[in-house]
Image (cartoon, rainbow over all chains, first blue to last red; front, side, top):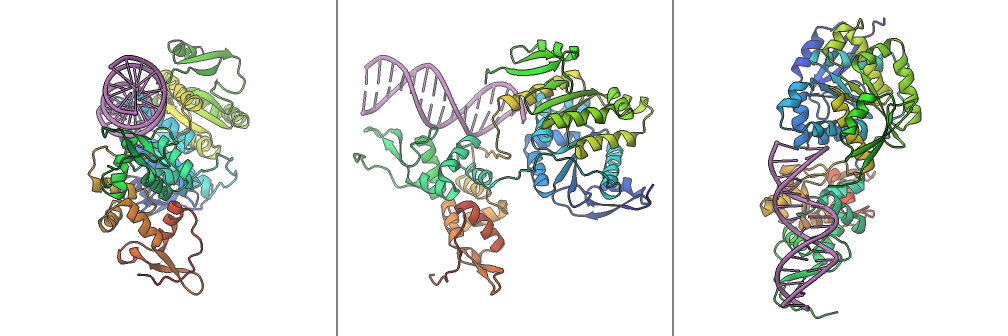
Length: 243
Length: 243
DNA sequence: CTGTAATCTTTATGA
DNA sequence: TCATAAAGATTACAG
């Protein structure tokens, strides 16, 4: 066996993990640092996020999980999620449906393309980390097989993401708007230029302007978002007889 | 909800799995076939190998595992390994060292690039298969990251929230921007009017414009967000003397 | 993530 | 044309 030492970087908050490695100083040494996007760094390309069962589940609900893992994926070519102690207790004691948990797990593993490795406990986690470090740093025999190209959030996605901040809008409509107007600024301008049509009795009837050709956008959307984006609009009392 | 049926192909030897899906005929239908390189086929690119704990371990020892998984990977672009019931009993009752088991697992997941999904039992496995089929066959690709804002938000909070969609910005900076410019549209305009100053050697040095009086916003922020908000900016070579 | 409720847009219908 | 109802799509929310 090689007598070369393994080196990893561990986030400073992972006290329990560090304790384990303190006992294996002759094999693996670590540096404790404040890491923002991972719990353990093994090499330039390999970074590990460790999640315990309960935290995994609760982070699904508030979207923390996907934010974290997406950042991990954008930063490191080989992101790894160690899923620690996802056991019966977790499945039964969180209000979450089992299908939701497995849906998220499937999404992370096969759709996001992050390597998921289940472990039973912290000790096992330490073993996994050591094995991975060993492969990365010493037994450098096999290049890893091509996996799906790490698709980072595209400019288009990022623009849609901004638009999703508006009211009554989700992924679908946001995407449609960016598709048509290209940039968030153009979307804002389009919303500004769109006006609400009223009946003679002053009930909102529909819209006219850049957004009228898209479906899914009506007077309610325009009204709410004009107010947010530009402040109060002057009263739209003028009759519309033109064209 | 969508009433489209899911279709999968199951290897004819997977009797127990088929029994589970017999109970969900209204959601998912399967065809039973002799499959040589996978246990379940979900689409042209997605195929699933299911391995129970003990079989997983013993297949490590006689090299069956890597043979199978390599063929799986060569044949399907998205190979998935469902690891069923890899529990304490398995770890303790096979002669294999724990580190060896985790070594193999790590190898499969991160080196071979196969999506590993752990489940507790056959029932969970069926759930995972159904979720994957659903994503593959019905749910159109969703944006990697979407955000949800509570419907009830003050106008000011809502405006900040929109601004938080920008790059390199959090609640603090977003609030500061809205505080100064009042509306998201005005913030966009301010970002547009802010220019990046360069040194003689064309290195970015600082900014000039509406944002220069605020703290925390530098040339990097301006550059990234101008591109997202307005598309590529033409060369900012002109001097600005106005206001 | 999933599943359901609430909301908005759009189409249909009658006054 | 307007007003209302029903149908369809999408978003909001709870677990």
